[in-house]
Image (cartoon, rainbow, N blue to C red):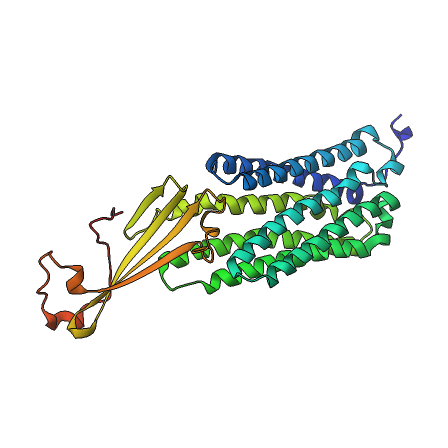
Length: 368
């Protein structure tokens, strides 16, 4: 009886790859939902346009996940054992490129706006917008090609439009990541309080940008190198990576804000409820020999602002958008600093031998 059962060929490089891609899609969708929840819980006072934009992305991401589940069900359940059906695309599968293109386009335009705010130049944001637009139009063309060709093994017939889609998606991500990292790195000041925030921003930018770039690039390489569905392992989760990259950027205001309060020098936390701004401040005092045989105290104050009204934390105000922080340096003489505290007559003979040190002091500060 068992010998009479038909033997099916291995489906590892057809439905198997598709199944893995869908599972990754659903897994990352869970992260998207958690990220969206964190955003709406913590940033209720963000501008409506930002909150609606996030809602649009979440809804588009949800629709993408549903369509992926639909075509997977059709292949594995409704048409189980139908090898002819398994070798062709269907309408739900064909919708994936355009859905991914829309999500990627929206995310990349958001980062283009951020780059514009950072660099105060229209050239790089314009290049990013052009690349994102070409990628979106090519994604639409890919969906049309899938509807026309149907058979997976013949998808190379429209490989030119796929190259434009994934190639410009990866190139645009590189431009975004490079622009943000370059500008942030150039904003380093040498002060630990400032550079700590900048380092966190750079690390986050590299992590999110590298993932989307890598998946789009590997997807394109595998598509061109093989007629199987192996490339779908990297293609199907791509939309979720874009959504997570944007949401993690918005939610970084939570983690960076928490980190600003865990500092070994003196610090303070103040809130401005009227504007919806939370300011986290780090200060340090450094002594150095000054003029007239009086040591000079250099006080540096590094602050980053969570502008919850605008939905971009320390990234969107004109005065501190470049680094997400604000630096204030004040020089005063030792005598001025300690006027009235019994130290006015500090022996000048000891001025030149004062060590360089960091000191936590301030009547109006809360010592950590």
